[in-house]
Length: 136
Ligand SMILES: [Zn+2]
Ligand SMILES: [Zn+2]
Image 1: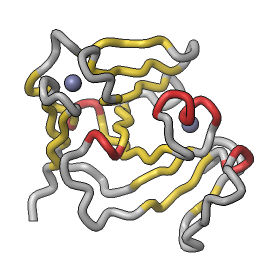
Image 2: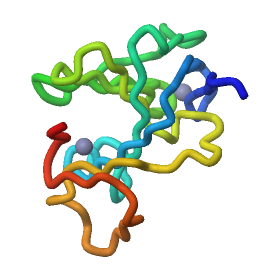
Image 3: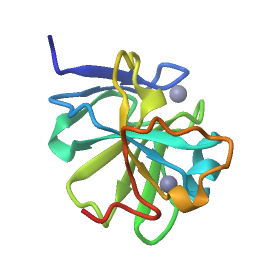
Image 4: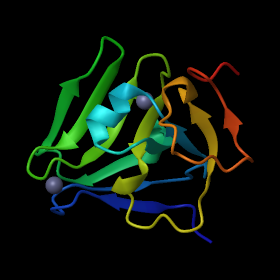
């Protein structure tokens, strides 16, 4: 099985590939991610910078400075979030799960910012859960 995952934005102008993606999905329950992505929580897959290959759409990829540590990169035509960079996690690109074309059987292994989790969001019970950011 290939470890390559294809991704794209909703309008199709941005296309990328994740190479050797570790299949670890992190759910973030923080307020900022709710604002940025519009969902009750946000699921991400993190890969090394070198393993994110942008194939098309460099000209429409736009950056929004969220905080002094976090930049959001999105398609300025359709608004699809493509990846985040966080200075607290140098060398990593954090890709929203929805930007991937096929999610398959990948399951979340970690929940962060559970202090901000909405009460009706059910937990799987087999994840590592942190009240704030990851501490190990
Ligand atoms: Zn787009
Ligand atoms: Zn978050």
